[in-house]
Length: 177
Image 1 (cartoon, rainbow, N blue to C red):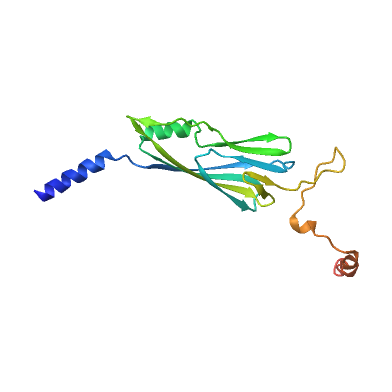
Image 2: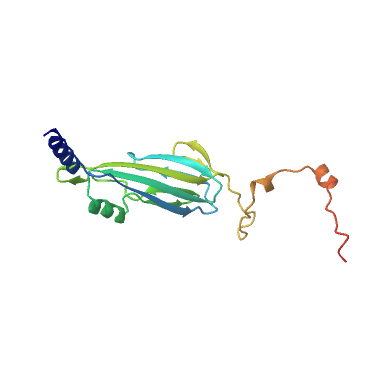
């Protein structure tokens, strides 16, 4: 009798629980050369972390976990872009924001769903955080209006004294004729 009672208890418990649905989304966003400021506007109940990286684009890795809902509802939320991000250029600033910033509560059969969303935002390492949600970098302004700015690497920005330039002269290849 004990085994039958235990089996019945486990069966009823297992059928009353809803499965956790989860998904990881990745998306990259181009950062225009003239962008000096990056503004992050993330949905207030989502958690996020910003990770500097050596790339020249922004990448968002969003981990989504939804409890107490059906798979069909979860897939519908994904199709509607509930957890996606968009960018908008505003002068020399780039706004990185959630596509759905007004998320309505989801209920399935009078049970409220629970959403846990965590995003890792990979930002080019040229940007430095100046305040929460605000990242800035120096942008070189072209000298002439028609001239496009030249992309330079960090190592090319090093100032070298004239003495060092004179001391290190380029060598000529004596084997060439």
